[in-house]
Structures are given as structure tokens and as C-alpha cells.
Image (cartoon, rainbow, N blue to C red; front, side, top):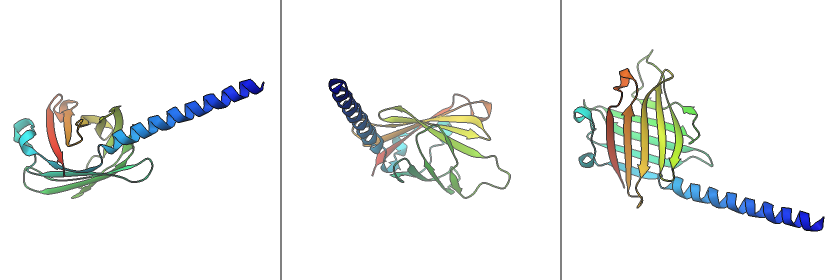
Amino acid sequence: MRHVSRFSLVALCLILAVALAERAAFAADEDKFLGTWALNAAKSSAPAGSVPSSATVVLSKTGEAGTYKSVSDFNLAGTALHSEITFAIDGKDYTPVNTPAPPPGAPSVTQSFERVGSSAYKTLVKVSGTAVATILNEVSADGKTLKVTTTGAGPAAGAGATATLVFDRT
């Protein structure tokens, strides 16, 4: 009996060691996204020349399970826009806070986040519960470039329309 319990203890220790190693590897991959990113408009592309003139993305940790994302850019009319969201990469819906605020009665916008690879996560954007875009966020192997590819979903969002914004780590 003593041999069985010793084996169980060794097995439990090995399982815990593997779990901790996987968590550490995931945390290292997740940290690839953290930092400040500046739009490289020359390397970016979007339909009808709709690449913003400038944009900055800041990603930081908010604790054990959360990430804070702040995005500042200028729309085609030159108006400054700012969006903030705190989220986890867990597939649940989160609501961004936008400045300027949407007008009263505007449809609700939510985003969910899902890991799709060691250097990539996917964002699903919904308006009033209907998916309108999928965003693939990928960090380069050297950690210096963030590529954000947005693909529209459904007729209201230009199904299949794609924009790729490239950001450099600052």
C-alpha cells in the first residue's frame, strides 16, 4: 500500500509541475501582446483607403486574469476616438467604453476574446448580439509587430471585407 501512495504522490507532483510549466508558457506568450503599439500606416491596408492617420494600442495586465486595452486613433474625418476595455481571453462578452460616447439609443457593442495560438487571439465584435466582425490579433515571432486583421461578417458589416492594420512596438 505504501508503494501505491508514494507512486500517487509522485504522479501528483509531476502533474502539478506540468500544469505550472504550461501556465508559465502561456503567461510568456500572453506577455508578447503587452505594451504600447503604434500604427504603421505604410504597412497597413483597408478598403477605400480607410486606414486611420494614426493609432495607438496599449495592452497591460489588470491582475491575474484580466487585460486592459486602450485604443486611441483618428477616424477619416480627423475626429479623435478613444476606446477602453478590460477583458479576459475566455470567450465571454465585454463592453468597451468609447469616447466620444455613442449617441443615446445606439445599439450595444460587445467583444469577446479567445486564444487561437501561442501568438494569436481572436476578437468577435457583436452589435446588439449579432456578430459583425472577427479580428485576428497576431504578434510576430520577434515580438516587434502586432498585426490586426479585421474581417466583416454579415451584410451590414460588409461580409468578407478585410482590413489589416500593422502596429510596431514602441
